[in-house]
Image (cartoon, rainbow, N blue to C red; front, side, top):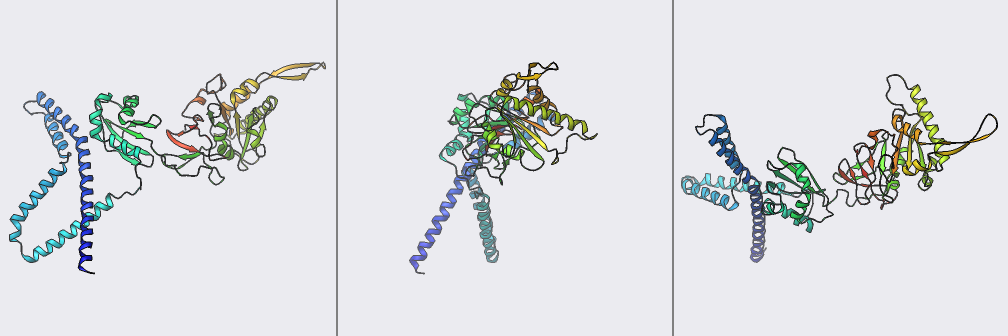
Amino acid sequence: MSQGQVWRTHRQYAATAARWTADHWRKESERRRALRAERKPLVRDARRALATARAIDPEGVTPLRHRAERELRTAKRRVPDPMWLFATKTATALGVAGYVWLPQVSARVWVWSAVAVVAAVTALSVWIAVRERDTTGLKPTAEESALLKRLQPQHWKEHAEQRGLSGTLTGRPKLTEAGIVCAVRLDGTWTATKLRSAEDHIRALLGARTSLRMQIKAGKQGGWAELTLRTRSAADGDDLTWTPERRSLGIDTVTGEQVTVPLGERLLIAGRSGAGKSVASRPLLFDASEGETNALVIIDLKRVEGRLWDHRARVASTPHEVIDVTDELETEMLERLSILPKGQDTWTPTPDRPRITVVVDEGAEVMTAADKVPYETETSDGKTRTTTRSALPALESIARMGRAACIDLWWMTQKPTIGDGIPSRSPPRSASPSAWPCARRPKRAWCSGRTHRPRAGTPTNSPCRVWR
């Protein structure tokens, strides 16, 4: 290698080292600046608490004042120095130590000390590189970069008062696979519920788009709340097409895990026309009709969805068929309950008497068309008499007692209100959001408070809202 090549190599190494040093200097400066903005209000609070304690106990004879002084010292220690002050102190200490001790150090000790210093610097550099390595591989988008900048404590502190958020202060925001997560410190006038009601003010402060989903909940400790901006989804890039091997309802967009609804639960699936109730329920219907111990019954007066399942389910598509099948189901339920062994809570499905899932597609239509259906009967004197029968009493009985007999009712409707789309004599807990999945919105869905994307027959199906 020529001397020129050696010189260029050294210059490249020096430039790389300079860039690395400048980058880490900038990151450390930003970290210290954020910590100072976050923790200096705690020092002010501790000082006010100490002033109050001194006013109460001017002689300092009670533990109140000593505790306040101790908390102030602790709060001060937690506030880091600015980077320029830290560098100045370090350089001064090293200069004084070198001036005092270096003349007294022998050559051998000097050599080994230099080797130790080089080794320590190398180890520290490797440790910092490993610690700050981006293990997630997440790169913020332009929108996320703007939101991360506005969530910094300095920006929040400058604009919080004019947005009606005085008394709140953000921590360090983090970019995750599910979006941006940031802790928010609350003073004595704020709670997580109150902060949630001020969502519009937060959105205006951050300049976030109106369609961006925002979640605010209580933090891990008192006086803190957690703000989450759903700028991305853990399900991005996944194939959402339903297959027999991937028999889940959808994908949790926070964790990326499969979302499933187990059999044996009564469900209410509600949503406007075309929202995707029938399509989103297809994975559930497949599970309910798969295996020797599962049987599916579909009540579909629209005669659309039931045709897709008539090869593996019993389908009732006329009012008379609905009444006949509900009468048979009620009789089967009562027989199972009568022979249920003593001490056993639920029926054990068998191939002869399997678990039966009864799906009502559009309950409001069933309540109208399958109620007061005319039947002609022949009396003992040979005359014909017209009577009316209804399928609602049997359906209501199944809704109340079917769980123990392993006969589960899944009710779909456009009007999830009792008396309109739900029978008025169904059990009150049946309409509880904590117990029923509901198909509701065409572009996103929730499961236990989390968004998930649904699967069904095609990758473009509409999702549903699910509570569990």
